[in-house]
Image (cartoon, rainbow, N blue to C red; front, side, top):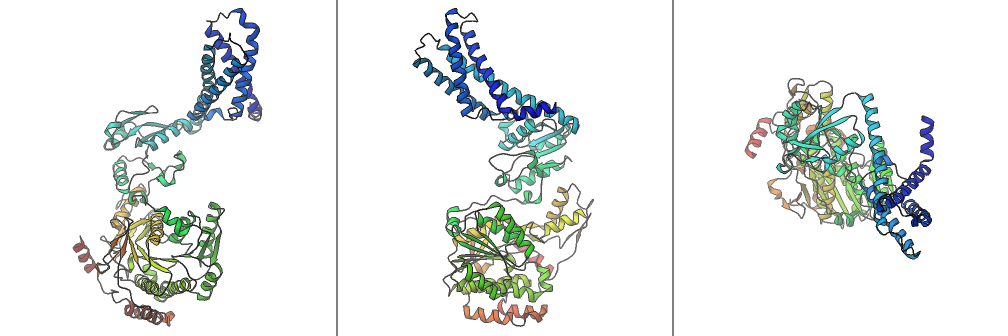
Length: 631
């Protein structure tokens, strides 16, 4: 059996031609039979053999040149039917020309139409029959291996839901059985898609899971915003069955989806925001054909910035990072994805002025995206000198080099923690903002800074920590019941950073629209629930109190900044009066002197000389009162 199967595979094309030849003969003979009600006049027999040979030869030539003999019949679909109709029509047309030019006026014209239709019926029937047999064989085989069918309820009777059902019926017939759809569109109630009916609304999901003995729910709405996804998950979770969803719209390729792409619902789905609308023309003008340098290229934000930059065809992309493993990973990824792009990995510490100047002198970047920084608040409280050295000194080194070597556009990634800072980290980022703002006054380079809040899933952020704690059985530690943070996905933040660069004319501090702040305790509860556990029952939530430098809530701009709208709906300009370059340079150099010997108190005193709004004595109670006053 195995040997015969291998022989068929090896000589598949020969077999296909032979089978089609037989079908073409049957179609032509059948057409004659139908035309004369299977009582063919004897006058046709002497010439009918020539007509048959010509008809079959024409069909073989047309079908062969159209690639009709090379496909796998078990994957036959609508496109194959269109191709079959086209080849059959062309064959009939050429055969008609042959009849006219040959002067065969006694050839019945109706046979051309009957032959055309029979060819489609016979060839199409064979192909679709082969597909049905293959699916049946797969179904039987999978049943033997996998046991009972998994009963699936699909949320969303749109294009994505249709693709899911088609995939289940086509490839996984023996493993999955779609029991029905739920959809809140009243016009879709009772509608059938591939034989699967819309059997209710989302509100009916829990009852339907029990009634239909559903094993799993699939959410087939890849474009659903975070609020809608949360509503769906909150409703379906009560049914107590596993929930899976599709990748986002931007991750689906050519409108196709497979069951292998389905994944568990994650926190990013619940916090998801509307897709970013990018001005691709202005981004092309900024990046295409330019030498772009990204600092902190191996970090969460820096690596995504590199991915976004690579999309727009820079002449050269310089990856600057002092972490060898992180730099290796992003360089390997970009080389694999963009094989024609010149990607240069540069191991360098941004505090090393000589090394940074050498990179600028050698490669002459025209666009610089400065993402390198120390970002963890408690860690910088323990190491204030390193925060000053890297966030302030490193920014000065890179921005001075950009000014010296004539960079056109310099974009610094900043943070919401720079607004009315309470931490060393936030205050050092504010100093860095002040320096690039002041340098812009005397430079031909356009210097801008972009602030945003927390990004989902970045290294060391709260979500990976919560996941580790849940996996360990808890407790999940939350600073305070009232603590809130803004959240944004890494791709969204990176895209908006680059978009802000196209808007900047120099000296601006851009503020990204981060949406509504999220309570960290709610985030913890969501993650526990998505893990299939019950908050405060299976996993304890423990409150630990504010750590040094932490805020209960973050701000993206101050009242004094008077944030104004830009042409992009998610990007605002915070206007603060800049200081003179001479003043800021003097303050920065004082701040950097003897930085390795600074303890936290000495560091705070020095930073406060530059950032007087640095607040170290605000209590949690005062923060809660301020939070309630803000509403």
